[in-house]
Image (tube, rainbow, N blue to C red; front, side, top):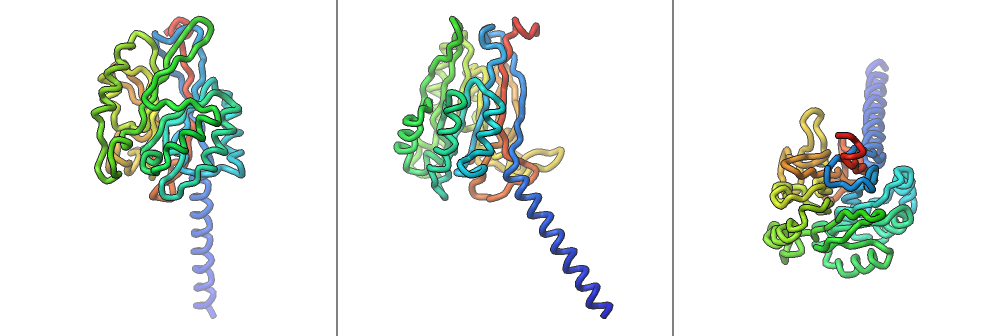
Length: 291
Ligand SMILES: [Fe+2]
């Protein structure tokens, strides 16, 4: 009798641990964090002081509530001036453009949306229809183009690199970056302006610095998938184990890069200590901030 009751206790103990672990994983993968910071640069015109940019990345077809209502409510509360998306809205393995478009249609009613592709759009083989749908919804697709943002008489610029995996015929071939570098070299002629760059790839940070890009938004690393306290991300595509660029901001010379931990998952279906993230950056004009 005594043995049976000890067995029962152990059984319920295991069940409670399993349920607690499940609740933790569900919370870790569905509860969105908003990470806010200010960015100061002398080139930012006074008219763009407090200009708020919401950064979305790596949705990978994930749905946050029916019709993406949970993430859209978060985004609306942020009240951004623009929304930038740095690729992987879809996942090539579980392709579902509707999930991405539900988000896009809500986002475009909050603020203008600027987008660059990621490796999953490149690998999907369906980029033409993805791009067509995004543009039909009102998104500005920055496939190696540079456009202006105006406030009164003042102008800043936003450019976007299409994912370098469009240049390879197979995702097993590795990343070809020659034309990325050539594009950056061309844009570096406009370094007197304030330039925002959207790119899926954080691992090319040194290249963005070399060509003097000011403020860069990237994704791709999924926060390193599992975040180890006091150490950082565990693994990221194209950076391997203990990757350098998985979250937060990184500054070198005159360039600052924000890396979104992203929202969804791809091969590995769960995140640990790495909740889905919306990055928010407010521009500060040096004249206004006094810095
Ligand atoms: Fe991704």
